[in-house]
Amino acid sequence: MNEEFQNQQSAPEEKHEEKEPFSTLSPVATAFIALIGIFLLYQVVGAILTLAIFGFNFEKADVNAIRLLTMGGQIMLILLPALILAKKIYHGNTTFILRMKLPHLKEVGAFVIGLFLLTPLLQSFLSLQNTILSKLASSFPLIKRFTDFLDQIDKLVTTTYGSLLTSHSPFETSFIIFVVAVIPAICEETLFRGLVQKSFEQKFKPFLSIFITAFFFGLYHFNPYGAIPLISLGVYFGYAAYLSDSIFVPMTLHFFNNLVSVLAFIILGNDELIKSGGVQGTSFVPQLITFVMFALLFFSYMVFVKKNYHRLTSK
Image (cartoon, rainbow, N blue to C red; front, side, top):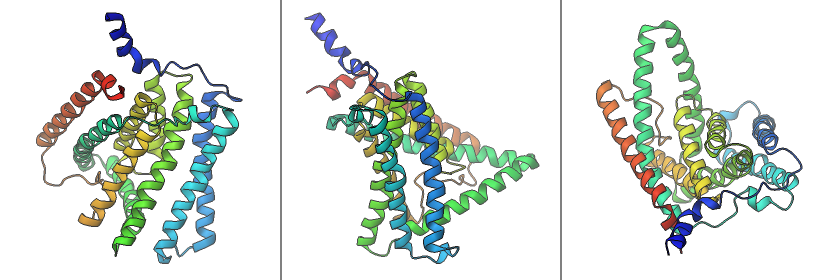
């Protein structure tokens, strides 16, 4: 009886001990080719298409046309190349490398709860980070010039996404959700938590695989102030993908994260769930206490999930 119970306890861990799948290229090389190649493809070809369609009067272009181009770019320049690489390099192992396994609903629910605990933690971190940067900028001219540069990039990013998220009807809101929440969740997770992270996992330890993937995930989004929170989100998505071994779990998390961002903009007029700007007039100590409280709550919950994960995957 004891042996049977121990076997059941260890079952969730055993699923990560599969043999390395057959591939025509080194898994690490595959991951970096996907990261660098698709990044250049998406940025360069995307920029060429944007100029060819809209010219240099991008700000005056029809917003729905921009949304369609954004959606098409994600599908054709991120999802499709990732699927082609997975198919060509991992012969007969495409579903394995892309984690095409249906998860238990309890797994999905547990990680969604964790996401909604992580979000205020990242928000409090941003407030703390920007308060520190503001104090340093007031004392050091070099840091002031650096933060002014970041402010310009952040304003450009905010303006660009703000126009995409502006809605005038329920139908338009549904279309925005599809373009900004559904499509990126499918395309980006297939690339990052599917092809890239799973390839790294064939050669590296799980945490290193998760972190490298999350680091590039953060860089892909060109959000200077939100880089660390985006990388943290990527780590959480990667951990969920690794533990569940299902791409559909991080896809769901990615969708909910973007969905709340869209709704926050439509309802509150803010295009980011995790705001870039620091909270003005708030002292350092209360922000630090808030951050520590949210951190303890989130990590306590994750310890609970890890210890009880076998219950989430049991029939």
